[in-house]
Length: 284
Image (cartoon, rainbow, N blue to C red; front, side):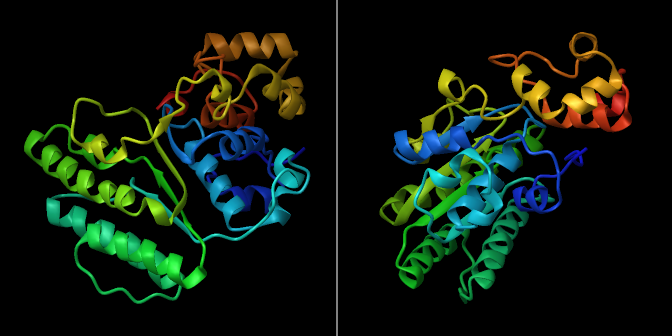
């Protein structure tokens, strides 16, 4: 049996490491061929948003070999584009200055990885310059992927003053994307919620929200059919398909989401443990 992707968010590592990968490229192909290229997606945590963005990143980087046997392999013209991928989680933000420093650090890493030397101290200016220089250097439009866009705000939600300061900074930071739209090939933003009634999304007024679009209901998580097709050996090892599914639903591993999607992380842990039982660490 293939390895289970417990906690793994890198598409490249999954494909090179002989892990189970549920093919979500039909949804990505639909995004590329039917949308304007400015996408917003919200899903609960542990539903595979980071892996989805990692897959999109590999696609735009032209890593065709990773897509061998997947739906999209022969559906597009493969090319390599510059990619900016920002994971907004994981920053230890004690102050607004920490937020600025964290953004600059992430942008500097991307600049250095692309052989660029940018010496700017303001995140908004740095992002704008980075996009422009990537475009000028490659001659191609830039792909921008933002994971957990609202995480810094949610982490500060108990401190209203701090949360508002971070929200204002992110409003201007994300606004740089709109100002650089002529240099962008594709933009995708993910989070666990869409923060409305605030200023943060005014910079994102042209994003296409696919969160509750029926055509993209299965873009993250697992459907019943995907479970049985991709995890059949693991399910059979536990018990019959029906008994396993009943226990999964009963114990909360697969809470309904749109078209009965299954949370990725919880199921992988369950199969790895070799049992379907309630574990507190799985549910948190």
